[in-house]
Image (cartoon, rainbow, N blue to C red; front, side, top):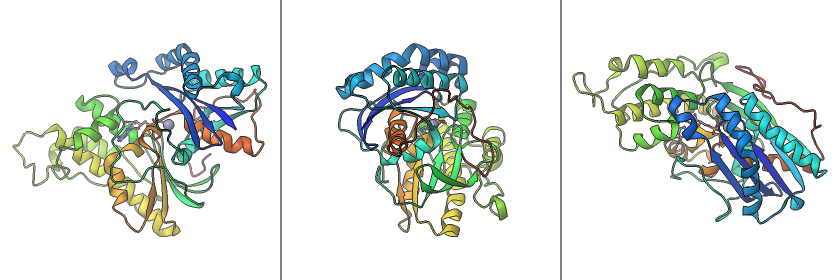
Length: 362
Ligand code: KG4
Ligand code: ZN
């Protein structure tokens, strides 16, 4: 079954065609980064306007690259939650119209669950188009199927979720962030220092030549009781942005001008330490030794290398180009729903949030 997947939850206008939930026939991701870079963050009004302008062309390109026409599509999936409401509505409405006009089954899917599904996608040789700025693949395996249950690590610009996954649509949140999301912390630090936008890929790149021991930033005091699997990034962000001088390590003593690469590498190391402490606590307590990652931050080369270093764990990442927002993961998980004969009514609406700092997700 060939499913068209549409994803417009944030600043990527994306469409893809995936066969039987795994085989990516095409994937087109039109990034809006240049339009938001001047503001150092996503401007929701610009995002939805660009989606409106681009969604037809992006979908057409996805069909063309797959060598298919609209008549070859057998099902349509779109991200309906969580994300920027105005942006989600564009893709969702377009997908509904496509499905309605061709009498196709339609499913609205959760974009975070789709991130967790992304590692199951099979990368085509030349059919896809990666967005710029993705981290190089290093040291950690990409793609692959994990048997349920496994531990999910969902790390994006808006969410940080450590969960137990019992099926593609059945997760139990074990931990989350009590303030900023992991990607948000990268973006805010980068914005403060003017490193570039979006911050994650930039800091990842800069860190390659930085000394991660130059600054010794503190970890949050979140390792006990109900917070054993939770993370917090606001303290780290404050330390890196406002109190940098207090945390100089031996390799960067007082009086030495800080190198920006050292700031980046020290921040990245601590950000990953925070994440992994909670993740490893969850693995230890649940006995789950397989970890499946997803979301933009899952492209981080240091995170991938650190997890690859844990030989006692099986860590599965999506191919780098399917870590960030893309239509293939939407089509992939959409197929799973459609294969169970689950469809959405055309009255289904977009939802900006599934929940905030809550145990339940979705
Ligand atoms: O999943 P995604 O594309 O969109 C959301 O659903 O939010 O994630 C975007 C986030 C941004 O915060 C971006 O800075 C971060 O992923 N990101 C990275 C890397 N590439 C993207 N963070 C760390 N290292 C990277 N290589
Ligand atoms: Zn996302």
